[in-house]
Length: 335
Ligand code: ATP
Ligand code: MG
Image 1: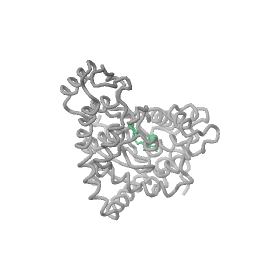
Image 2: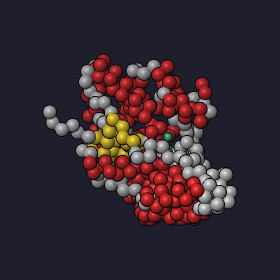
Image 3: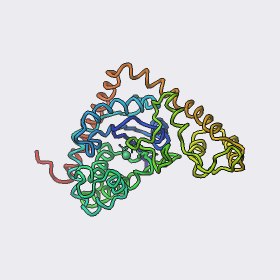
Image 4: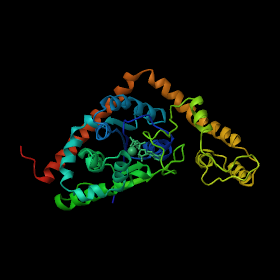
């Protein structure tokens, strides 16, 4: 048997600029995998973004460029990764229609990710139908280009599970067509928000963005939640629920020093300002080169759009091939 081809697909919803959660949850793996995989795709999921932003097309439109800039600034190389826009590949919508026949309403409603997001957005039964079925459209995103490795944050795992159910059903009914899909979660599966909330999110107002200035980073870190009982420097402090230490654990490479600081903080005698100042520098060191590269790329938005246009042409070619095969399998290849 020959070596299995690895095809990677990842993407972002153009609903806002990208943040540290995206970086550790997915982008780091994307950048690494573009050198290791046989083929890499990066999709800007504007169709999916519209499922819960139908009345805000301007927001989705303007963030297409922003998420492209964020990914390029983090090291996505358009020569290695095919970058494209979802709505420009109508075959994805077509494939979604056929996949929808393989999924029940009960199963859609049971998806824990969708359930959580519906609750967060206060939808109830008034959820837009397009939003409820976005995992099915995500199956089409992944399978139109036959990808089999998906770098995602932990919040997306139930979606990948549902994609694999669609793969199984499709292959069983129409014959072997798609491979099972594997996920790859980053070292930090779910970065907490600067407010200590369970997830740093674009729309949750609790993020440090990859484009934040030094001043913004400083302000956000200085306002971070530490330990409300750590009032005086000499009071013993909690490190477990302390957002500053959670971030130092993730972003500070000097693990020995962080361990020492934790001991000192637990015993008492280490002030919040000291650990916050350390975190500000650690985050600035990470963000500064990304921010600088981003600012340079942003000077020429036409060049970025051209990258997306070229990638879209390539993705579309592949989409047409897959659709031809799918239509043969479903026996709707008439002429
Ligand atoms: P939205 O609120 O619009 O859904 P989002 O912040 O959840 O925005 P997405 O574009 O939905 O961002 O997610 C892009 C990728 O980043 C996904 O793989 C997702 O799992 C991952 N991701 C998002 N937030 C985090 C986080 N806080 N920690 C780790 N991974 C994350
Ligand atoms: Mg999301």
